[in-house]
Structure formats: C-alpha cells, structure tokens
Length: 213
Ligand SMILES: [Fe+2]
Ligand SMILES: [Fe+2]
Image 1 (cartoon, rainbow, N blue to C red):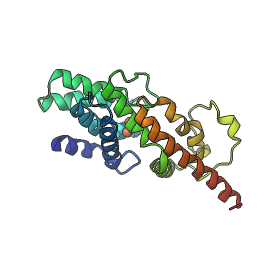
Image 2 (cartoon, helix red, strand yellow):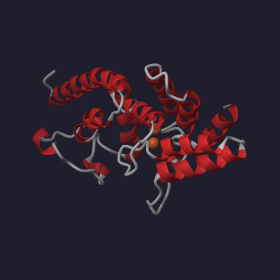
Image 3 (cartoon, rainbow, N blue to C red):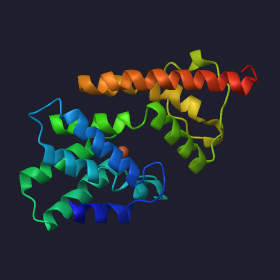
Image 4 (spheres, rainbow, N blue to C red):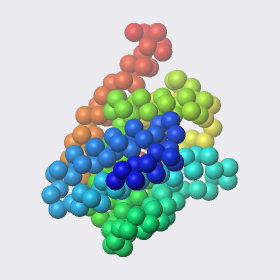
C-alpha cells in the first residue's frame, strides 16, 4: 500500500483532485463499506488510492482526448501487475476505476465499483464540495458568482466557456443531481445532508451578492 501511495503522489499535483481528495475518497469508501460486509475491502482500498491517478494527465492533455478513468484503469493494471497482484484482483480494481467517473459511459457493475463511485461523488458535495468547486473556479479562471435564471438550468449540459461558469452554475447543472447517480443507501443518506447544506450556501451567496444580506 505504501508503494501505491508513493506512485499516486508522484502523479498528482495540488489541485481540487490532489492526494487529499484521494484520502477523503478512501476514508468515505471504507465508511460506506461498513454497511456492506460482503464488500472486498482490499479492492476498495486499492481502487480508491489509484482512482484519479491519471487526472493530471487528462487535465494537461493538449488534445483533450484522455479520459482519466480509462487511462487510470490501464495504468493501474500495469502497476498492480508489477507489484505481483493476482489477475482477478487487478480486474476488479480496474473495473472500479474505469467506471468511477460521473460522466463516464461505463457504469459500475460490482459492489466495490459502486462504493468507490459513491465515495467519489460524495466528495463533490457538501461543505467539501463547495470548497472544491471554488478551487476549480480558481484553477480555470471562473467567476465567483453569476446570477442566472435557475429554471433555465433544469436540463443544462456541460459548460465549456469558463468565463461564463461559476460554482453556483456547477451546482445547478451537476452537483445537486449527484444524488441520482448514487448506488448505496448509506451514501444517499449522507448526500441528503450535504446537498441541503449546499442549497442553503448558494442561496445565501445569491443574497449576499445582491447586497440583501
Ligand atoms: Fe476521477
Ligand atoms: Fe476522484
């Protein structure tokens, strides 16, 4: 496990997807797994540590063709093979990594993959989610707040021009819908509390920006 952590740390930088995110996902995944005694804890641990290993490679890819879930699954296979892990274990980990992405086309099929996906989603909402959304806003040069008609964002798609983007829009477009992409009942319960807090935060932010509070 120490070796894996070293390898992952070398690949990550200080961003919203840094090693702290990896550790929070690991911790959350283990918490979710407490409610599923049949889950393979070793698969969950290794998947959580490796899940965003290709994130920086995707973010810095000039061709914008790298999918960090897919590349991360491939890199993990090689790394685990070199470390002597068994084939079935490697398959289980690489499936979890390949399917962890919110917008990915591969959906989690195993309990361990569902738990990793849920833990990763939970780290995008609540107070942490707010903090991370502003980290991302800083990374991409987004604005602090953009006043929008919320009814127009019921089914909005991904926004590509970051000057027109802000954390409150990310919340409307994506983050508040994360609960619909969760698999485990435990994660759904945690998500309810986190989303309630986010809703209150962005409501208050709106009023402060307007100068009403
Ligand atoms: Fe990811
Ligand atoms: Fe992640």
